[in-house]
Length: 224
Length: 302
Image (cartoon, rainbow over all chains, first blue to last red; front, side):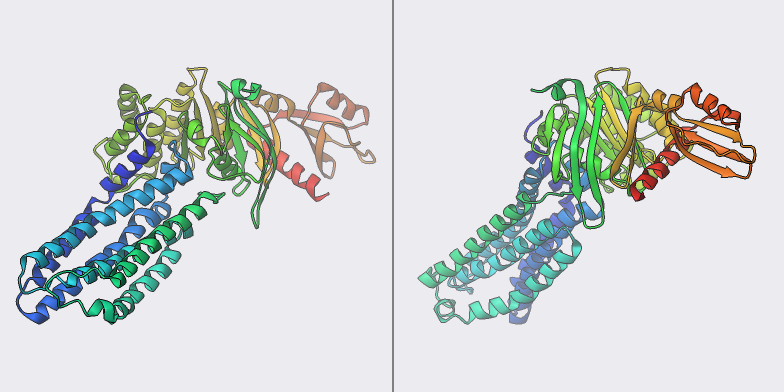
C-alpha cells in the first residue's frame, strides 16, 4: 500500500481538473480588475462578473468531476481500486470542495485586498461581501450533493437551476435586511449579531448538506 | 479464518439480488485458487451483476460472498488490493495518456512491475504517450488489461474482456491471460458470451441464465458428458425417455438425442428398442451451452 487511497483520488481529481479551475481563477481575476475601474457602470459589471464566475464554477465542477465519472464510465475504473463507496465519497467531496475553495478563496481574498487598498470603497461592505460570497459556496454544496446522491445529470441540472435562480433572490433579500444594509457605507466593517447570525446559518447549512450527503451515500447498496 | 478463505479464490453461497425486472437467484459458485473459470451467459443473464457483487460494487440482498478470504462487500477494500478488475464497460480517462494511468496505478500498488508493464506495452502494440481518446476499442481494452496485469493481482475478475475485439486482439489477450496462470497461485474469473474464448482457456465453466446458475463443472467434464446421438427410428418404434437424455428432436425417421450424462450404455439402450444409432457426436461448448439453456428454461416453465 502506498499512502492513503483518499489522497490518491484527490490528487487524481486535481490533475484531471486543472483546466477548469485555472480558467475560473483567470476569469474571476479579470472580473476583479474590471471592478477596479473608476466608472460606476463598469465597476458594477466587474462585480457581477465576479459573482457569475463563482456561480459558473459551482455549477460546472460537480458536472465535470462527479457526473462525468459516471457518464464517461470511468467510475468503474476508480471503484476497481481498493476504495469503498464511503471513501470514494469522502475523496470526491474533499477534492471538489478544495477545487471550489481554491478559486473561491483566491477571488474572495483578492476582493478583500481591493477593498482594503482602495480608499473610495467603504470597509462596511466586507461583511456583506462575505455573506453574499457564501451563497455560491452553499449552492455548490447542494449541486455536489445532488450529483453524488442522485448519480445523474438530471438531478444536477435540477439542483443547478434551483440554485442559480435563487442566488439573485437571496442576495436581494439579504441586501434589504436593514441591520445589514445600514452598515454598508461605514468606513469600518461592522460584525453585528445579524451578520453573525446570517453567516453562521450559512455555515450550518453547508454542514447539514454534507451530513445528509454522507448519510445517503453510506446507505447505498448499489454503487455502479 | 474458514476453509473458504484459504482454498478458494471466490465463493458465493446462496447469493440473491432482486431488481425490479431482474432477479439474481440463489447463486452458488466456487473457484479454487490457481484456476480459470469462464462464466458464460447470454446478454442480461446476470454475469455482470454477479461480478459486481464479487467486487463489492453491488450489495447482495442475501447470501454470502467471499473473495480471497474476504467477506464482500464489507471487506472490499482489503480484497481489492489483490483483485484486478476490468470490464467491457469500464473506461479510462480520455484526456490523459496511458503513461499517466500507469503512473497513477504504480503510485498506488507497490506490486506494480514496471518491466512487465513495458513488456506488455510492446506485446499489445501500445504507446505510453498516447492519449486514451486516440485509442481504438481494442487498444483501450488492452490498455485496461495492462493496468490490471502489471500490478500482479492474485485474482483477475474480467467482465466480457474480449467483447467487440477482432480475432487478433482476442488472441493476444487470451494468450496473456494464459501466461498469467504460469503462477499457480493466481486465479481468473471471466465472463463472456463467446464460448470459444471460454473454451480456449478455462479450467472450469459456469453457465448462467436468467439470473440462475444452470450448470458449473470442469471444462473436460462438460465435453466428456455431453453428446449428440443421431438415430434412425423405424416406423412404429417409440423412443423411450432415458436417464441422461435431456431432449430428443425427431423429424420422420431421423432423430437427434442430446445427452448431458453420456455413457456408452445409452447407445445400447436405444439399439435395444429397435432404433439404429448412426453416430455419436461430440458437442462444442457453444452447443452444450445452448442445449443447457434451453433445457433449463423448459424445466423452469414446466
